Amino acid sequence: MYKAIKLLPLSIFFLIVITYSQYLVAEDSLVVSNYKLDSGDSIRISIFGEDDMLLETKLDDSSLITYPYIEQPIKVRGMSVKQLEEFLLERLKPDVFLNPSIQISVIEYRPFFINGQVSSPGGYPFQPGLNVSKAITLAGGLTERASESSIYVVRATDKSESKIKVKLNDKVFPGDVLSIEESFF
Image (cartoon, rainbow, N blue to C red; front, side):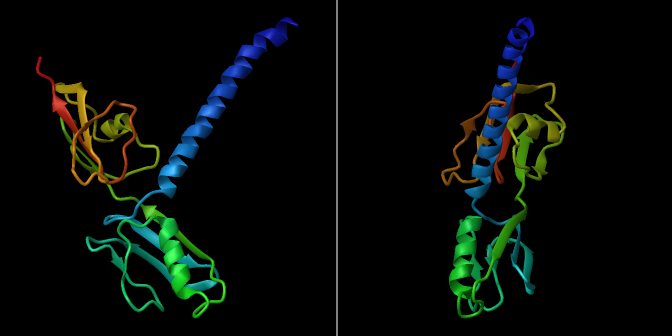
């Protein structure tokens, strides 16, 4: 009886940890599934069983790609992977392929940028699950003059380019620009 009571809080703790971990994975999956393609992304398009239909490309500033059997270049900027898949399926089925199994993946996301009071400002490869604290670590950490309470981001998806104050555990997305300001004391 004593052992069962002692283990109960531990089992609840693990249940909470596992549930939270699943939430984080689900949240990252949602971000990735809703991700909009743009210049700097590297993508891979393939059709199962059709080796000659493989395309691996890094999107340039125009975000245009050409794909076999599709006459016009495709502007993929702003499309999700799912939208691009549906677009290709519409154009390839049934005239070119009877029932194509198209797979599209992002091989490499466009970088995020960090400037201001970090040891090595610049652009860094994005990785799913990235937050402000991890981004600062990638940039060599904060300088002695950095203010942990004055960290801002300009989201790549924000057309107005507004600076938003963020905390260390806030998410960073591809194309974001982080600015770490100087402390004044």
